[in-house]
Amino acid sequence: MTLPDAAAAFDGRAYLVTGAASGIGLACAQHLTANGAARLVLVDSDAEALARVDLGCTLDLLPGDVADEALWDEAAAVLTGIDGAVINAGVAGAGAIAALSFAAWRRILAVNLDGAFLTLRAAMRALDGRAGAIVAVASAAGIKAEPGVAAYGASKAGLIQLVKVAAKEGAAQRLRVNAIAPAGVETPVWDAVPMFAERAATIGREAAFAELAALATPLGRYAKPDEVAAQVGFLLSDAAALMTGTVLVSDGGYLL
Image (spheres, one colour):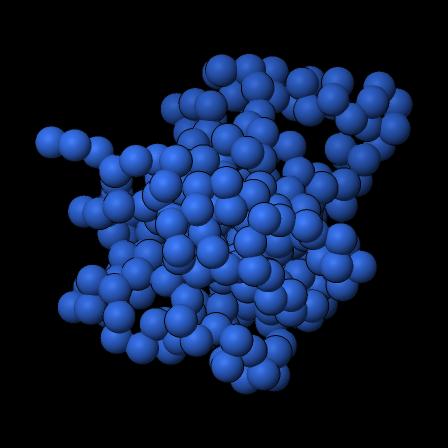
């Protein structure tokens, strides 16, 4: 058996990537480009950061909120011809259930689950019965319960189930839909977590990540965005041709 050439895994193909201006989304866009993608449709709510993305392929930039259905209605034409998608846009938040406001709950669910649904629906409509591959960035928080992350964990657990249903619905057309569930990843999403922000201000960002990882993961470190991007790339590639409806856990042993 000869495995597909990783360096040309996406030759001539086109992909949608959300949350593409930074972190995992940007790393995925860079990975796809480095491995042959010809066109990327990039979505992010940060229009200025999105405008600064510069990659070696044709780019269609769509600034906007993934939870806004109007964005996807307007994007339908530019999504024509895509071969797959990376559903990555997300927000974090923390708070005990009893203290959590409904507004805070809805903010996280709106982006992480409503936005993922709208992205997935748009991608499946654009594929229009063709084969392809979609990967959603879930989280180990959607599998393992921890205090203080009810909204985020529920949004990622819902996303995992959404992926499984989509995999069954897409199977007849050879559309593969998978999820990846990292634990800690060194991305800007942590900056919105007060505990991390306070610690980073005291000892520095890298030291704060190292401190958290030493406490949370048996391997003692968090992932870099490009490591997660390579794993997303594997799930999108023909090397994962028989994988659909799966959740690839990449957590440094967090779930053990």
